[in-house]
Amino acid sequence: MADNLLLPLTAILALLPASLMSLRRGYDRDGVFWAVLAVAGAGPLTWVLIHNAGAWRVDFSTSLWITVSATVILFIVVAALTDHAWRLTPLLMPYMIILAVLATLWRHTDIAERQTILGAWTSIHIIVSVVTYGLLTIAAVGALAAVLQERALKRKQPTALTPLLPPVVECDRLLVRLLGLSEIVLAIGLATGVALNVSAGGATLAPDHKTILTVAAFIVIGLLLLVHYRSGLRGRKAARLVLLAYLLLTLGYLGVKFVTDVLVT
Image 1 (cartoon, one colour):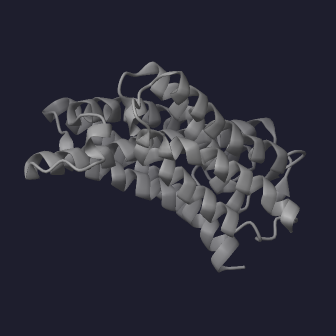
Image 2 (image 1 turned 30 degrees about the vertical axis):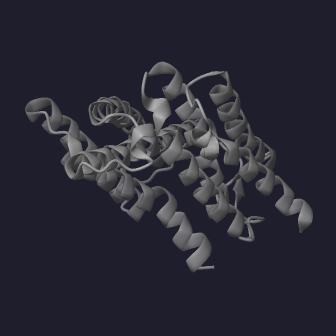
């Protein structure tokens, strides 16, 4: 029992310095920032690689750990390629810790019979799905940051957190980029899902909750991007639609696993 708990606790501890990093004096995107973020990415990734060695596990706890690992790694890339995304760290990393703690609490789920050997199309579909959810997670955190910044501006009462976050304008720019990329990757994910269904002799789109919610998220993101480019929709209204798309994809990706692996078992 202690051995089973040691690795996830170590992964959680690897995330902790990144979640507290904004409290240090002279907080900036410097060498310390990248070193701490690298540790935050290495902890969950190591857990995923060890836990899934030999076979892919499809339980709720593992899905949460994969989400944390993928999101942190993608965030490192996004933070390196953009000027202001790194300032989402005070919101994103505590959220990653919450997901990691939930994954650890549900580690008791019986996974012995929930392993599978992956084929090529299945592997591609899973990778694309994980990348999509990771990108949309970062976008959702950016949307939350925009809401907090806009609220502080309207009330003229900045909080201790808002000076650490990107300005509203930069949040909007980041959202559009992430949503555009998420929409492309999500389209690829839907296409690979169709390929899997057709190769197995099934319907083009499986009429299940996961597919319906994923398609709904795809439509919401597409409409948001369309409205943004036509009318310049941004700020709190755009953020709410981003959070709606994230909720739909969460229900389709993690929600279904939670029901089948936690509530039903």
